[in-house]
Amino acid sequence: MDATSSEISERTLVALAKALRAVRLEAIVIGNSASMLNGAPVTTQTIDLLIRDTGPNRRKLARFAKEIGGSTPVRISELSNIESIESALAVPIEIHYDRIAGGLTFSFLRSRAQLVTVGREKLAVAALADVIRSKEAANRPKDRAVLPILRDTLAVKSKLEAPPED
Image 1 (tube, helix red, strand yellow):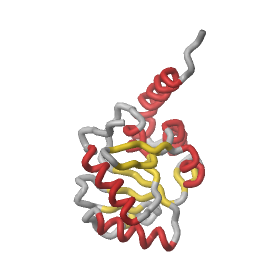
Image 2: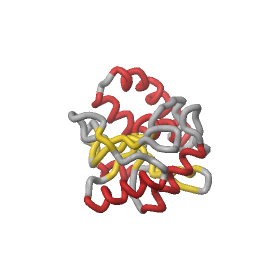
Image 3: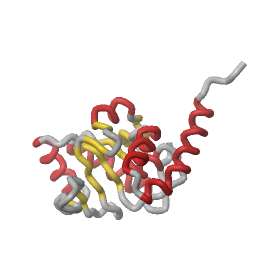
Image 4: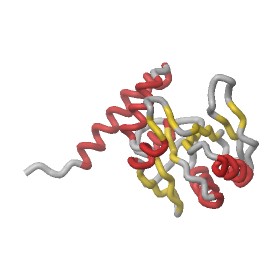
């Protein structure tokens, strides 16, 4: 799959994947970034990653931030455990820990994620159905606005992947 958009270029995604591989940080691309990589005609101004919240992963995350020329991860608000990394990748990276809206855990998303090729690298990307479930549960205006596009994309993908009828 060729992964590009006006905000997030293939070069950015390749650099992201290389940095994750270099520090051995297991992460799943979620949110509109995942939607885009699943073929939905959406854009985003951040790359959202889900990781497990462990001591070793926190250390890997700090090395990842350095690898991408980024800042130390900073909490986006006192009410959230989401952290942001400002980086040389041209877009902020938002780090989510353990679970996302809809009760979707890292383990569950990983079991259904697909590996998407960007350049010569691979990224684990949340399944589009799971992105939809999370956005429905979050129920923010920006999520409600994109849901029809995501549902239409999933319907088209399902028809294209279905076995031909006799």
